[in-house]
Length: 303
Image (cartoon, rainbow, N blue to C red; front, side, top):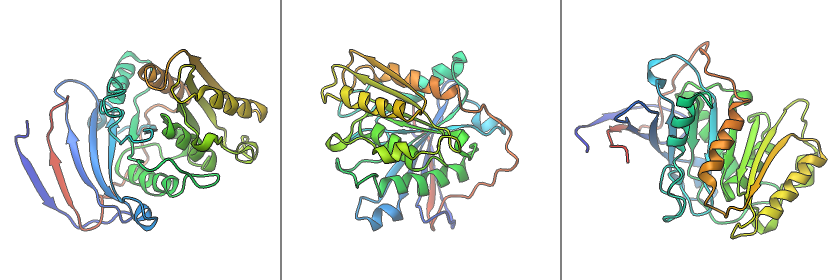
């Protein structure tokens, strides 16, 4: 229940994004999810819907320590939003998947290091440009990542970043990591879909400089996937194997949705084995949000 609302007018600048944050403090010891409303210049210039919501999961005690944390970027699939992994699912399907609760449990049990999870809204039509997903890769790489690094205590280098996703979001994550290995050290895919049956090209994988930018991959597919994606994922794994890129591939009898909660947990555990733990940052300068906007803080109950 909302008990109080404060509206503060600010004049601030950050990469021409309009940010309206909404904080969600929980009633018990747990992480916190904050939601931000963004106007993207890159998406607007490409004729895409520019108004987007961004969700950020912060681990317990984020606000009471000075530690900097690694970041996992988690991308939803086709028709999803930034809230897909926060209980919204896809129109009732996969509503059991709560990335925040999974992270809470794994952090509390010591199975993963405390980390930040960023959930962007990448909703669009099922298309891609040759060898990429522009402008959405640009949106994430050139707008979302700088915003997150400027406004949260992150480890702002490739060793502190991982990217993964479900279905089309898995496709996005793999392409983005291979196209920007200077920004990400880990990539994952949960029931990854490949538009038109297309895999990341041989050149994109084969020309990757593993010595300079080591990438590790974690992938999952179910043999009962409604979209018959397991063979395509096996083909991608074969490509990684051919060019000597390290990977873990998990396959079971699941479908496109019903094992994602379990497999996301395993994906985060794998990433945590490589990501650095929380460190004390040398300096942190918060660039307060953006363009002549308003900052609104609203207290919401946890569902």
